[in-house]
Amino acid sequence: MAEIEQPLKKSPQIRPWRYIPTLIIVGLAVYLLLPQIATLKNSWLVVQHMIWWAVALAVVSQVLSYLGAGYMLHAILDIEHQKLPIWKGALITMGSVSIGLVAGGWVGGAAATYGWIHKENHDGNTAAMAGTLPALLDNVALVVMTLVGVIYLLVVHDLGNTQLIEFGIILLALLMVAAGGVVVLRFPETAIRLVVWLAGRWSAMRHKPFTPEPTIAMVKQFVATWHSLRKGNWERPMLGAVANLAFDMLTVYFLFIAAGHSVSVGILIAGYGLPFILGKMAFMLPGGVGVIEAGMVAIYDSLKVPNAVSVVVILGYRLFSFWLPTLLGFVAAAYLSGNLPGRKTKQS
Image: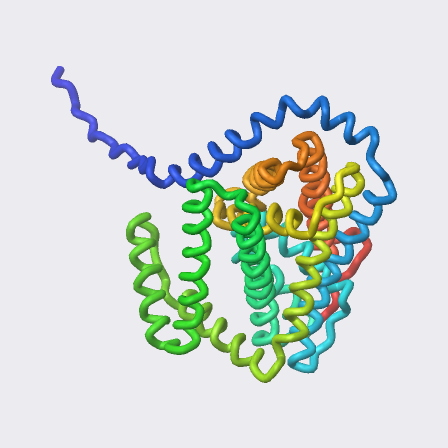
C-alpha cells in the first residue's frame, strides 16, 4: 500500500532577538546581585542592631509618598473643579500600580486610573487626564533628580569611562524623549503621522496587527493635557509629584539612619535616580525588579557605603515601597471596583 503523505505543519517561527533585551537586563541584575550574597551574614548583623524608631519614620515617609501621589490626582481633578479626596487618590495610585504590574504595565495602570476616576465623576476627559498626567509628571521629577545625581557623581569623580558612556547614553535617550514631547506639542499633526508610522512599522516587525486609532487618541490626549496645564495649572499637580518623589527618597534616608550609617543628600540622590531610570527602561520586568535593587546597591557601594548596610537598606526600602504596597494595591483595587465582600458598588 502506498504511503499517504501527510502535509507538513508549518513550525512556528522563533525570533530570538525579541528576548535579547530581557536577557541583557536580567543578566546585568544577576551579575550585580550575586556578589551581594556573600554579604548577607554581615547584613543580618546590621538588621539586629537597627534603630527601630528610624524604621518607623521610613514607613511614615512611604505613607506620605503615596499621599503625595494622591494629592497629585486631587489637584488634577481640581483643575476641572471636581473633587477627589487625597486618601482616595492614594488608593487609586496604589491600585493602578498593582494592576499595571500584572496587566499591561503603564498602559494598564493608566487604564485602571481612568476607569476609577470616570466611575467617580463620569467625566471622560478629566479621567483621561488623570490617567496619563501622573506618569508624565513623575518622570519629569525623576529625570531632574537623575540629572542632579549624575552631576554629583561627576563632581566627586566616581564615574569611570565605561560608566560615563553608559549614563551618557541614558541621558541622551531621556533628552530625545523630551525633545519628542516638544515636537508633539509644537507640531501635533506632524507628530501624529510620525508616531502612527513608527508604531505601524514596529507592529509589522513583530508581525502584530496594528490599529492606529488608539495611538492617535493617545497623542491628542497628551496635547490636550498640556494645554489644560498652561497658565499655572501645572504647579499643584507637580507639587504632588515632587512630594511623592521626595518622601520616597526620605524612606531610603531614614533606613540608612536605622542601619547606623547616615549619608549626605548628594550620595542619597546619586544612588536613587539612575537605578529607577534603568528600571523604567527594563519595562519587561515588572516594577524593575532586580534592576533597581542591583543598581542602587552598586552605586552606593561605589560611593563607599558599606555593602552590608546598602543591601539591608535597599531590600528594606523595596519592601516598604514596592512589595507591601503592591499587595495592598490589589486590596485597594478590589475596594475601588466594589468587589470587597459586604461592599456594594455605587449605582451611577
